[in-house]
Length: 307
Image (tube, rainbow, N blue to C red):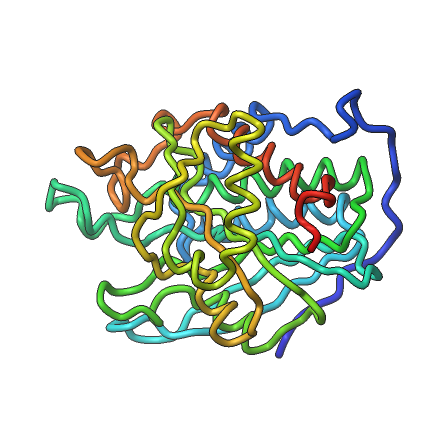
């Protein structure tokens, strides 16, 4: 295992808003989405990848209690040579006996292999939704966690090298979360939530099927709370099973982890996933707001989530 301890300090506590919970700002979150996309494609080995690593690290180093960089190398199926990746871990309240993980991948797909225009199939995607959206939520959460110390330990994990895989070969995906799960840099994480493809303008979030099996109790609590909070993007129906970063966390680390994902982007009739149309114009602050608001509730409103 290789990781780097950057620093540690106590976070400053401020009074929250009149609801008793910090207010998630969807517009701030959306700006983070746009900022990432302005770096261009962000697959490992690209200039955009280097710029995004610096962008995330520079933001969270001033917000987290502890920041870890977990570096690793990996091979890409069917490609020569190896690539370098970095998982970025921002820790809050690290001394708490109760630790949870909220994660998202920050890399983007090197090939638009689902684009209807075959001339685009070997071009890298921008990844506004599939890459930038989950990170955008995490970066706004990082700001709130600095302003209002959480009652439990929160580990915001930005996973690298999720999206360079080959269809039909699951473990060619999720290289960062596989490495993290086999070389845990943080002890005692009791459960986790992955955010992926949560920025779609037409956001519709069914219950991902693996998640129901991995941690059905947390799934039910989150979707029940979303209904109570009138977060209409969360649909009380079971969707497809998707191999995502939550699978290695369950499989290799034994951390019960769920996936919040809208795989039908933007809907059942049109596909922007892994195409050149995965751009900021097809995402929205309102969608990020819904997901972020539920994550704030999960972090601070523990009476609804504790056994």
